[in-house]
Length: 208
Length: 252
Image (cartoon, rainbow over all chains, first blue to last red; front, side, top):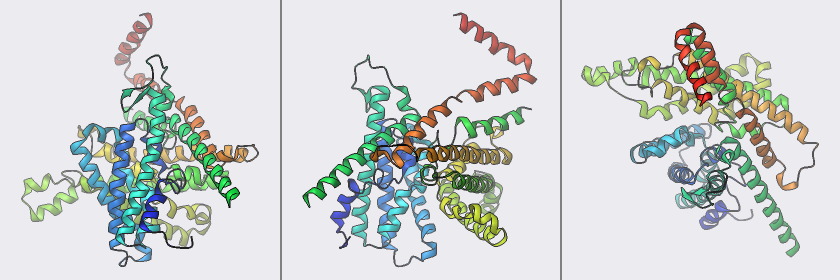
C-alpha cells in the first residue's frame, strides 16, 4: 500500500475487503463451533468485539513500553484479563448462554484475530486508529459468523433466531446443526466468496 | 477395574468419538495450515501431543494445589494474613485463564530451548512447530477440560486425578495426529484433481474435513457400549436390569 490507511479506511477494510474470517482465515475455531444457531453466534461476536476493542486500546496505549521478545506474552495476558471479565459477565447475566458456549468463551484468548490485530495494527498505531480498526474487524467477524449461523440454523432446524421461517413440512437437515455441517457450510461459503472476489478483480482489470 | 475402564473410555473418547479437531473444532489453524504433506503433519501432531501432555500436567497441578477452594498452597499462604476459616475457603479459580496461558507459554519456551540444546535431531523433526502451538486452541482446550473435571465437579470423589488428565492429553494429541495425517494424505491426492479455482486451498480442505467429520460421527455411542461391556463383566447382577429393559423396548 502506498499510503498509510486512515482510521476510517481501516474500519471499512475490516468488514469486507479484509474480512478476518473469509479473507484472512483467522479465528476459525469459534467460527465453526458456535454457529449452529444465531443467538450463540451473536453472543460470541459481541464477546469478541469487547475483548478486541479493549485489547487493542490497551496495546496501543502501552506500545512504547513493549519489549519485542515479550510482546506476545503481554498480548495474551491482556487478552486473558478481558476474557475473564466477559466470562464472569456472561455467567452472571446470561447463564444458559454461558453454559451452551462452554469452553469457547475462554478460547477467545487464543483466537488468532485478536493477537494478529494487536501485533499488526495496535502495537504500531495511536489509540483512535487502533479502536476503529478493532471495531471494523469485529464487524467483519460478526458478519461472517452471522452468515454461517444463518445458513446452518435455517437448514438445520427450519428456524431463524428461534422463529420458524420454513414450512413445518421441512425435513430438518440435522447434519447442518452437527459438526460436519459447520465444515461443509463454511467450505462452500468460502468458495462462493472467493468466486465473487475473483469476478470483481477481473472487472477491475478490464476497466483499468 | 472400574478405574481402568474409566481411563480406557477417556482414551477412546478423546481419540475417536470426541476428536479435538473434528468434533470440538479446536486446533483448526494447524489442521488447515500444516496439512500439505504427511511428514510435516506427523511432526506437527507429535509436537501438539508433547506440549499438550506438559500443559495437562501443569494445569492439573496448578488447579489442584493452588486454584480450587481449600487448595493446600493458596490456603497456607492466605493463612499467614487471614484467619483460618477464611483462608480455607479462598477461591482463585477466577484467575485460571490468565494462569494457564502464562504457564503454557512459559513452559513451551523452556522446553523449546532445552530440546534445541540437548536433542538437535529431535528439534529438527518437530521443534520448529513448538513456538507456533503455544497459542493453539487445542492446548488451552485440554487445560480447560481438565479444570472443569477438577474444579467444576460437585462430588469431590468424581474429580479427576493426574493419570486421567494425562491420558486425556496424550490421547487427545493422538486424535489430533490421526486427523491431521489423514487430512494430509487426502490433500496429497487432491493435488492431482481438477478443483474449481475458487475452491482451491482452504475451501476444499474444509469440505473434505466435513466429510471426515461425518465419518468420525460413526463412532458415536461406541464409548457407552464399550463402557457397559467392561463394567458389566465384573458386576453381572447390576447388568441384568438394563438388558431386560432393552428387550422390552424392542418389543414395544
